[in-house]
Structures are given as C-alpha cells and as structure tokens.
Image 1 (tube, rainbow, N blue to C red):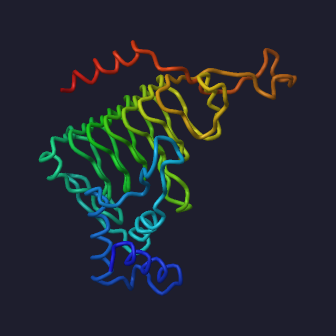
Image 2 (tube, rainbow, N blue to C red):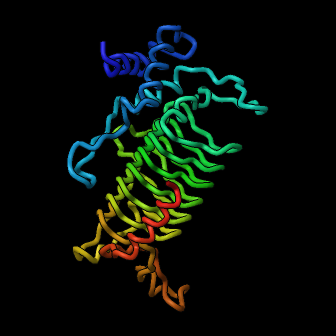
Image 3 (cartoon, one colour):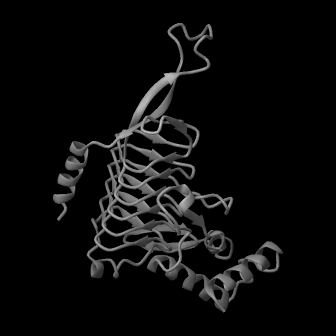
Length: 281
C-alpha cells in the first residue's frame, strides 16, 4: 500500500468519525510518523512543479495537506522539552542531525524547525527564524533573521529571504495552493508573501513589499495587471495608486492604495545579488 493510499484511508475514517485521537493506535501513529519523515526527506511535497515556471506549472497535492491535518487531529497535545523550555504541542520539533551532513546550518538560540519540514543542502537558517510543518526549502536557500516560512510553503533553490520576511502558510482548504517562491528569487528585508501568491524565478523584490492576491501587480513588461502572480525575471517594488475612495469627503488630499510595479530586471541588480551570494561561499 502506498503512502498516499494509507493517508487517504485514514482521512476517510477520520472524516466519518470512525477514527479519533483517543482511538489512534500504534499502527496509525507509525503511519503518520512515516509520512512526516517523507516530508522531511523531500520525498513527498504539498505542491510540485510539473511544467514551466509560473502558477500553471504547479499542482497541489491535496492528500499531503490532509496528512498534515491528520497529524493534528489524531495526536494528543502533550508537554515536550526543548533545551530548558517546556512547551505543549501535538508534534515534537524536527531532529536536525541530518542537516550538517548536507552542509546546511542553523545558528543557535532561535532557529526552530517543526516536524515535517524539509531543508535541502547548503541552506542557512539564521536566528531567530521558524520553518513550519510541510514547508519545503530547497538547496542553497537563505532564511535570514526574524523570518517565518509558513506551513506548506514551497521555496526553490538559491532563494534569499531578507531579514524580517514572512512567507505565509496555508493548510485549509486543502485544494488551495500554498505560497510558491521559485528558484533564484531574492526578497528584500521586511517582505510579506501571503495567501498562495506565486513568485516567478530569478525575480528581485524590493524591501517591505507586500505580495498578496488582493494587491494588483502592474507588469510594465507585458503591459498587464496581474493578481496572485509575479512573473519571472522581474524587479518589483511597492508603489501607491489612486483608490476608488479618492473623491470621498474624508480624504481631502486623495486616497491611495498599495500596488506592486514589476519591471525588467537590470544587470546591475543581478550583480548586487550575486555579490551578496558570494559572501556566503
């Protein structure tokens, strides 16, 4: 029986109230443990790229998100120890002995990796930072100080998250796409990427930019307005555009709303990014 078949069977029983945390025995918990191990090794993922760069090239694996939800629904919250800290959760934190073997490093006192999170080779996690269950962080990616990588988020190879960056997570509904940041993306300090937004490969995003499906992306390369997607090979930053509330009496000077402007990426921008990467080698 495949892992997907086992998770689907448990999910059906759980949804039909045939299986509860009180009734989950060793065999069920062993299946859930094996599922988490598969996530950590990168053998299964909440979303996968099956085509070209762009949102249409990705598929969501709903059964994987169901497996993560089962780990919350079929486990008891108990007291756990991490160093000198006692915390209460359904899952322990991820074991990290395998990271050093692959050249990945996490600095002490504040890098937290939850069970079911994958970190590839030659990654760096700076303190404090947090990677949640189901997240996939590919080879060579930097998670800087005060960063959060949410549940099921997918980060490609050689991605750079500037300090104080938030990558949002999503578990439900299971058919919703998680945040996807493709290979070679650089997100400046203080960026926010939420609600299943997709960032195309080799794009450089200016600091404090909010990427959300509710905020329009004005792509000046193709002269179009996009929602939920920033194309590949762009330089993007926040600007403010006139709001429909601009004529309201309360806004004497006019009202404006945030937007994202995307331009062709320039060679000097790429050079700066490459120089920063060289400092890590």
